Image 1 (cartoon, rainbow, N blue to C red):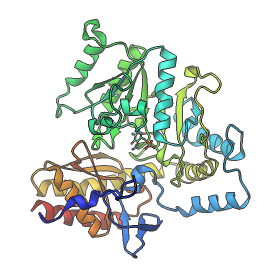
Image 2: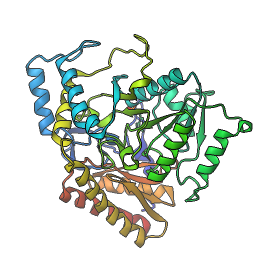
Image 3: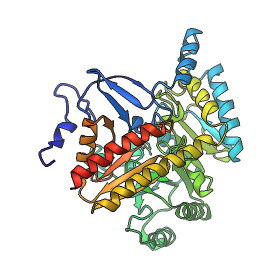
Image 4: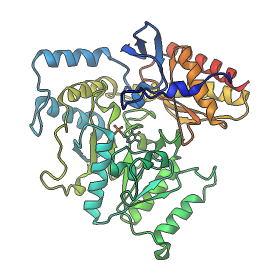
Length: 419
Ligand code: PMP
């Protein structure tokens, strides 16, 4: 095991400013939970585009809808036009997602990516409140544009931008102090004490489960206390659901577990359903202070993605089946990870729904497990500040047999690395 050179799995190609994740091969095609390499090797995908492929690769229903749309010369780029695809998506989103949950949000298309949605959320919060600063959390990740990066907690990622970034103050995320819960008390004290030096913020931005930050799960009661604290002080609550939304943790919106209603919500990754770029920013009706053209951009609203997004919502979110299946599959990963944690010192587990982490006290072990899993035909990536967590994000559509197969590969790799 010690002979494995994990650095080869993080190589930079010499002549291209791009990087290959930890997988030294060239991939060619993909179907469902599987990705095929050019050399014919097949890999089970427990990464799923970092949560952009909740319905699997080339989902047959979405693929057919896309083929039909293109065959009929459906509009691909229709900037600021009302289009049939856009209208149909919005109606379906309202009917299947917002109304049944009693959510009365306006829907904005902020640009193609998650970071665009975060930018729109931060700008809107600042414009509505007339305040400048934002509260973010330790280990948060919100994207790589300047505003989104400013509320990101990873110093390695922030270093590329130079300083100072946009004004943001980090507070401890739930369980940051190893299960000590007084951190919340400290947070409210700092907000209320005029001597703390903290300017009243426009908004708090939070992930319910920090994906990039290491699968850190906020307890529902912590999220409720945070929502109350914001409401009492007229601070807007932004939930960044870019990675945890669209059913990743079970319910369509990850914050449903806490019964809270954020003021602003960001969505991207799996909202388009087919891996096509698409993002939404949702905000309470009374927050609509945008003037014409104040947040524009050429690629806001991807019509082919509206088509696949609508079909995905109709197929998977017209009843409760996806929610329940995700919780059941998540439980299976948890059982398997708990067995590993019981068997080996320095291994623990945490997660919610189909985002589950296997946490190693010795960070290099997580990279080794992923490297060995790759050799056995499984794609999984590490996350966390020291890349100490093997993070599983399989497609929500994964079969029980596929899940069991992938977990057996991980169990074998963990046993080899830890013994
Ligand atoms: N917010 C969260 C919670 C994310 O996980 C990510 C991406 N990993 C982003 C924002 C940024 O999204 P994008 O990469 O599409 O800009």
